[in-house]
Image (cartoon, rainbow, N blue to C red; front, side, top):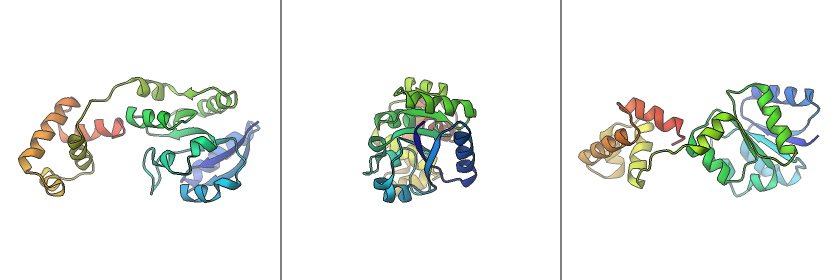
Amino acid sequence: MSLITLLEDHSIVRDGLRYLLEQEGHRIEAEFGDPDDLFRRIGELRSDILITDLDFANYKFTAILEHPARITERFRTIVLSMHTGPNVVRQAIRQGIAAYVSKGRGAQELLSAVQAVERGQPYFCDEARKAADSHSPHITPREREVLELLVAGLSPKDVAKKLGISDKTVYVHRIKLLQKFKARSVFELQSRARELGI
């Protein structure tokens, strides 16, 4: 059985993961609630596998995988996340993860992922597999900036001020984004963008 490190900011989830994995005979070497604590101690750890969430206060989506500590080179990394949008999953794959499991799946799915990774095989739950194969709309860098600010809840006027462009330009970008995402409202646009991990 592999030695495993857990990175998850919710104590109750960490406790549940430890219990589940230890019941199956796996050994937990270390647990962290904050990625920076893991990065500080990474040289001391002997774990083969890291099970990690992607959503932390200081690190969003795949930011922890892109950190200079290069956790995917140090550990066979299993992502356990509620985020299964195509952009997030594809970026995680590009960063070299070994497995991706949605938090919406049952305990057996995570155990299957651990077993696959121990055998040197990749593992992706159905949602992650579909997300990796799907295509999100192509948007320009400026449209992405507008979209990110709209998703953050800024009004078109505030978006215009922040980007130093006219209100009219923001409205044009918004119309194009609604069309590209097949959304009927900004609320629906925000929903679609979040689903895709944008």
